[in-house]
Length: 176
Image 1: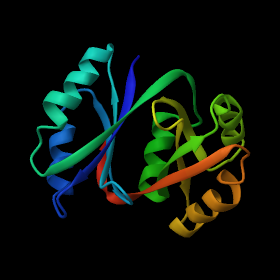
Image 2: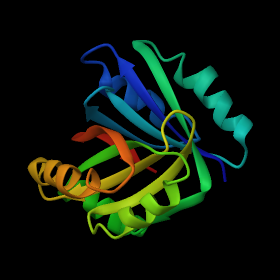
Image 3: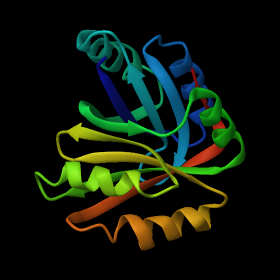
Image 4: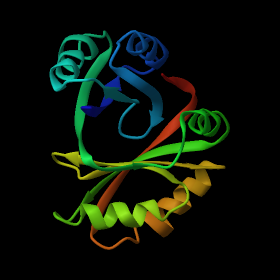
C-alpha cells in the first residue's frame, strides 16, 4: 500500500483550520501540529500511488494558508511498527511525541533501521525515497526525554549524518 508523509509550512495560527481540512481528505490517515521547521506533518495511505499524488497536488496544496509542502515517499519494503492501533491512541494521548527525519550514508538504511528498532521509545520507522533516508516516530514522557533520546541514542548510531526533529503539539491533530 503506497504511503507518504507531507510536511507543511503554513500561516501562523491557521493550524487548527488546516488540520480540520486535512481530516476531510480520505487518504490522509494522520495529521499533527508540530514545533520545528514545519508546522504540520501528515501521513497518507492509499491503495495506489496516483491517489496519493492527487491528494497532495489537488487537495492538500489547495488548502488556503499553506505556504509550502515537502513530500516524503515511503519505501514500504523497509519499515517497522511496534504498537497496535489502540496502544498508539493511548501513547498519542498521554506521551510527548516527535518525528525525526534522518539523513544518513547511502546503503546504510537497513542497518540504521535495525538499530532504531532496538530503541524502546521509537515506535515506528520507515525508509524514505528521496533527499532523506528514514523517518521515525518516538514517544516519551516529556519533550526533555525526547531530546535526550535523539541526542544520546539516535544521533549516536553510526552513519547518521543529520536529523530534523518535529515535536508534535499534543492537542493539534488526529489519527484515523
